[in-house]
Image (cartoon, rainbow, N blue to C red; front, side):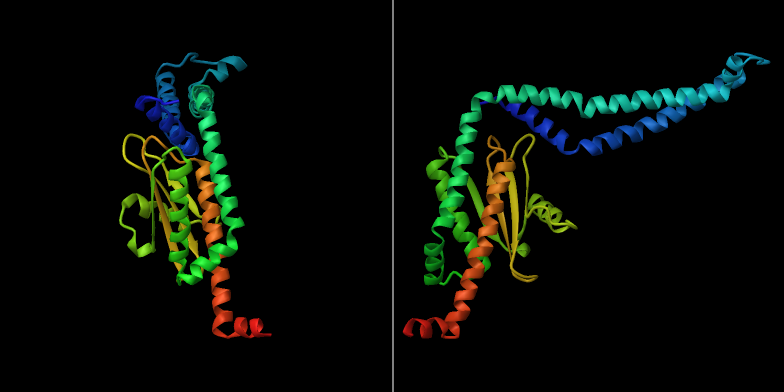
Length: 277
């Protein structure tokens, strides 16, 4: 189902809010705490200059002293602030997501077809592993960048053929060739992971421009290839796309390792001697 640009924009905002939920909560609490302390101090000053009871005699009257009124005000404002923050980052987003799911229900068939084609591509490449190795070696494509270019080029052709004309551009470069600010930002975020969770990351544009997915594959500290995938605004990336390109990067390493091993055997005449025997 084709959605208007307004609904696309709203969906991007929702997805972005979901991604930065903890940051939003932190900012709201940073704003709430000074307000709560300020109001508490203000109420303390008000009742300090005009106390409710001049000479408190009962327990209730003692708790009506300015210091307790100020503390109670602070706690109440903090409580409402925490409640408001949780409502902002949880309830509205869940309801909108439910509405979003209902709104995109009719397009599930299209997305399901796309995911199925992605899975079919990955399984096909594994099935043709021997032919892939032979082709790369016959054409002397042994560098990591060349292997990744071979796979991404075949995937791009596959998508154009079976993806209902879904257009995307894929560039394979080394890190020093990165030029765009967005690409450099994504590359840095992947490299700065203390524990590697994913070799890919993507960002979908909120208003206009191309959506970008970037992936990194490394054979050593010096041998590294960077994949940059761009897709038009109307086709944002999701977790299924990320997993597909993760599998492409993983298979790149399998192909590269196989080619390096066979090349070493060939250079040492092990393959030739084995065939003669």
